[in-house]
Amino acid sequence: MRYELYYWPGIQGRGEFVRLALEEAGADYVDVARGKSGIGKMMHLLEANTLTHPPFAPPFLKAGPLIIAQTTNILLFLGDHLGLAPKSQAGRLWTHQLQLTIADIVAEAHDTHHPVASSLYYEDQKEEAGRAAKAFRDQRIPKFLGYFETVLKRSRGPYFNGRVLSYADLSLFQVVEGLRYSFPRAMKRAEAKLPHVVALRDRVSARPRIAAYLASKRRLPFNEEGIFRHYPELDS
Amino acid sequence: MRYELYYWPGIQGRGEFVRLALEEAGADYVDVARGKSGIGKMMHLLEANTLTHPPFAPPFLKAGPLIIAQTTNILLFLGDHLGLAPKSQAGRLWTHQLQLTIADIVAEAHDTHHPVASSLYYEDQKEEAGRAAKAFRDQRIPKFLGYFETVLKRSRGPYFNGRVLSYADLSLFQVVEGLRYSFPRAMKRAEAKLPHVVALRDRVSARPRIAAYLASKRRLPFNEEGIFRHYPELDS
Image 1 (cartoon, each protein chain N blue to C red):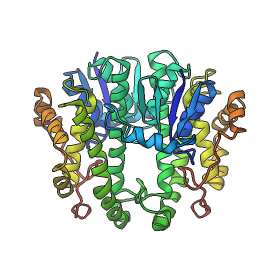
Image 2: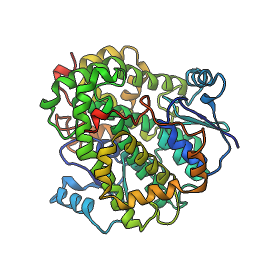
Image 3: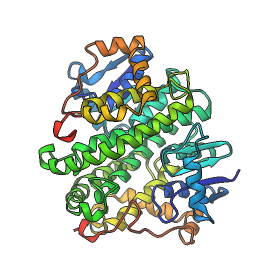
Image 4: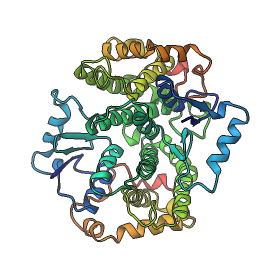
């Protein structure tokens, strides 16, 4: 089956967590909104008044007759279909639980530059962003990544489920990349205490399909339109 | 099986979404942290260094040998086990997708009173909260609840999956209750355009087990320690 991914074409954003899963599995997929008239096609589907299961927002995935939205829900589906999650009930739930916790830190990373409202410009909430980013750097990065460090230590690594890769490992790689881009100074300090997290990041980046993807034009660069933004004043 | 729910004892919070599912199903459960030495028992489990699948935070559910955290993940599990979700793959994913969107509005409702950092007092971010609450009232409540209204219209109601109740319906009831408590004036305006959402809320509240629960002491009142808080200055 050829999967159709729909997501904003200029950013990694939440779509990137889905792209990494599709790429690692070597899945046949098209990144619709990056093609010709792509945004129009995405908006057409998003606003279609004939869908009984409409997405609230991108990303969403078309898989045959199914249209699935919400990043963690898409990964729950792809985990089963692409062999990127354990088959046992306990393992599936645990992997999904980790993904939901990853989604929480991603949302908080976004909110450092938009603490008041997503609808306002960064420049209109810059002072508040400074305060939010300080709390995120000092408290939240160590708390979230410290948790993942503990979990990886207990799994005996290199991955969350031990020796078998899952979509949650790909997503933690992306979180580390995004945080390094946004907060290079804070991450340098934090990583000294996160050997297992860094080792996972390195293992994921060296997987042949991921390495090929990262070197390709399909991998968009980080930028100041996405979730992970580098504003030097938020990393001081 | 007797389920064990672990959540902060003084608030509805995220635990309430789980309580409503357990109550509707007439499940045998104990709300551990509300019992004797309950918080100690919760912290003991949360900090146990023997768990290979530790929760990041409450709520979490003990179901036999499984410990499941993250509200939407707990509901994914209970949906299957308590008959509160469709059995088809499409129906299960759709119900979970709705729950994840509900989780998004719940997080944004929380952030209206804590836009800068959860670790700071409301009083230390009151001005920012005023700006965040305005955007939430004017843009986000209509957008989220308008989406659920559209979905319910297309399902032909009264519930998200038509005539069959799911955990997502119970959660939308809770969101309406919480928003009415937090933003009574804004909700009065919004509800004029949300007949299907209000009808779902009424249907859920009239279900015998839910009505009995709401009238019992097991239902904690809303308060200014929880997610949905009433600060009149944020509703003007």
